[in-house]
Length: 465
Image (cartoon, rainbow, N blue to C red):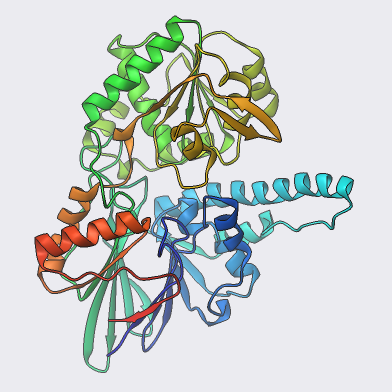
């Protein structure tokens, strides 16, 4: 029995996760994510899918980050008529994330068209609308972890906890046809052990093939203890000088983790009890979803919640929804901490905060997540002293700090450990979701540790297992 896997995203790069599995009885799409990064990369989102959406039978989401689910409304817009399947928490988070993404698509198109009208150029259309996003959610089923789901056509799936973000899963796909049985495991994005709020990743079982992400496949993370010391140091230096601390953070996962650690540092008197503002309607909505799914929490987080000591609720913490409140934050120069999206500074309210404050020497700009190539965040992290924001040049004089220990992705050792047992058991290994050097770095380590000659697929390649 041959099963074909088309690598239609997260191949040769770290975004756009999309794998089409063609079995004898079903066509299953695992993830349908945005390409994120430079303008050239993001232009790929509007391109036709390299398969007919009408031929897909079911779509599976590993988690609710946009590079894994962001193109789903476009898939339905272009003809997909089937169901979507995710964990219960991912289903609820996708409802928040996709609605926000649709609003951004519509807003960005409207803004661009105002400029185009002045320049005599034709209008552009948004990639998809809020109605397209709602259509996806109407057809999305949320299921618990560790529960076998029958997709029909001899195909079943089971979600296992990947420890990446709330609701994130790796997918075990079992295919039975003509008396034969094959098991394929899709890692999704893998998290680290000992992270705040959520549980540690589970280990995969035996399988015939396994797809492993490689975001940090060529490097090791800083330890969390030293990262928290760096966070406290940067916050203290800026606040004590009367400055403002800006933290670009992904709305889902990273924002909540940062709030957790700020709360812990505050309670330990390691940072001042300064106001903390979460200036992101999306992050506010995502935090509401966290509150709904304590079944995803680890023991420490559940103990805090049981003691009514939630890191999402304390006097200095403020959630900002309205645009007017966000504007007022920029007009107030009192010392504070502002956590705002987007995490790579590609859009959102963080752009306004950087434009208003990053030129000040007493400000701090703290990066706590992966910065994709071509993004504004990557440019600043790489040392740019002047950047272009909203058609205006902005000098970067703030203290720029990269906090490497907050990654929601496992590092090289974590990835190799996770995939080691299946690789040694003879599973065919595909290394995906990483920049070329990261993917090749993980491939070499796997060869050394397991003797596996892993495959690093190119975009739109099809491989049989």
